[in-house]
Length: 152
Image 1: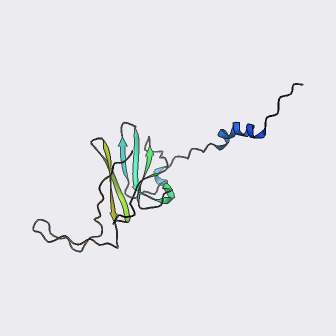
Image 2 (image 1 turned 90 degrees about the vertical axis):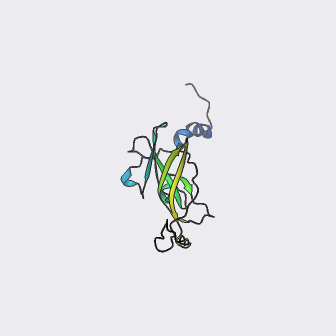
Image 3 (image 1 turned 30 degrees about the vertical axis):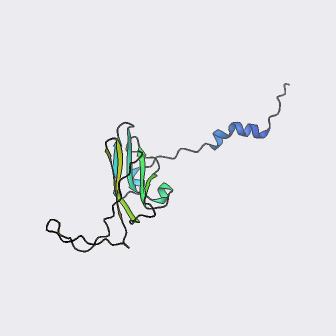
């Protein structure tokens, strides 16, 4: 009977560990199961990928904060888990909202636009003008942040 040298247990486990510890691929998400509020879908033709942008939710993205998250898909049916693509900076006037995002390509760069507000910081009403009449009470839903390029 032929004997084989004994391998230490850690060598055997080490050789098998990639198969044992590989993270499973998450099951694709489908639209009825995804919490979406005013989503925007961008079709990125060069990569043949769809990007669905919506308000950030920590439960889906794993990131806490007001902002925007994006799901990706190759077929509009199966979606990868969301990734946070924008968070409102802590120094911004607007600290709430981030709904109804839109992403547009302009001269080879992508720009994210989103609605933000802060109920505690009301903006002053614009001055009366014959060109632009005031529309009533001061507004708290007019915070503007300069657009930043997206990395989609």
